[in-house]
Image: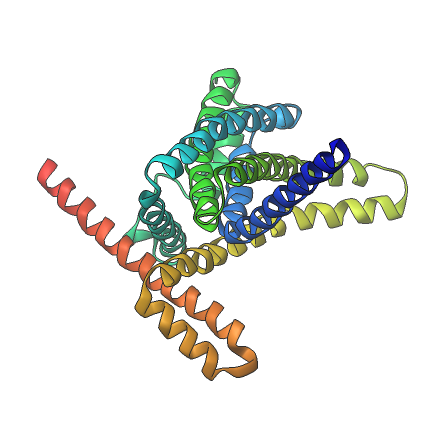
Amino acid sequence: MAGGSLLMLLDDISTILDDVATMTKLATKKTAGVLGDDLALNAQQVTGVRADRELSVVWAVAKGSFVNKLILVPAALIISAVAAWLITPLLMIGGLFLCFEGAEKIVHKFAPQLLPHDLDDEDAHVERLAANADESVDLVALEKEKIKGAIRTDFILSAEIVVISLGVMTASTLQTKALALSAIAILMTVGVYGLVALIVKIDDVGLSLTQKPGAGSQKLGRGLLAFAPKLMKFLSIAGTLAMFLVGGGILVHGIDILHHQAEDLAALSGVFGGLTETAYNGIVGLLAGLIILALYVLFKKMTDKNAH
């Protein structure tokens, strides 16, 4: 009897772990857009900090990210248990926000006069470097402010990850949701900030190699120095594209008429059905983002006009 009970327990544990692994894998795919943006954004946030303080700043932001998820995961589980009907609206809001962020990046890149920011990325980077070189600037205060800003940004991105992940697990038990969300929170925090640490140190490694006596080391070092900014640009582009694909996918699956259109187009495309559906999600995401952005700009202009 005891042996049979133990085997049943092990079988239950194996089933739960299998469910958790499946849910974690599905949720990770769905949050790809947020992860790409998270990587690029956090790497940019740390850029400009003194080289000997980069890893300390990354570690400080990573700890803040863990605290964010310690707040968000239990909150999401409570919502799931008490008001499960809220998950779909929250998921749709998260999808719209992803599309809005992607549209904002594109408009700011190609038509900055329509959506002016305080500083372009390049100008902000130059300003940070100037602050590091200025002895009158309180670098400790500047660093603390940078960390606070990065943690605030992480809270928004983490909330998107948790909500999108929860949307994948609507049919799962509370236990599976708790374990899967916890696994996602840990894996994504470690993964994102581990990669951020590697990214911000690529140029330092490259510079160190260029100072080595061997010709091979120097060539590799120059290659890494040239690769670092290209990697940042690629992450930014890939993250923006993934925002439209993921955000648009959430909207398509949440709105029946769009979902049916996507299925019909996929069926007509035959072997290219999956690619067609993905492209459809991206187009829906782009259009939704541009519409929300236009409404945001209009609202901002109206409020600024009333303020004056």
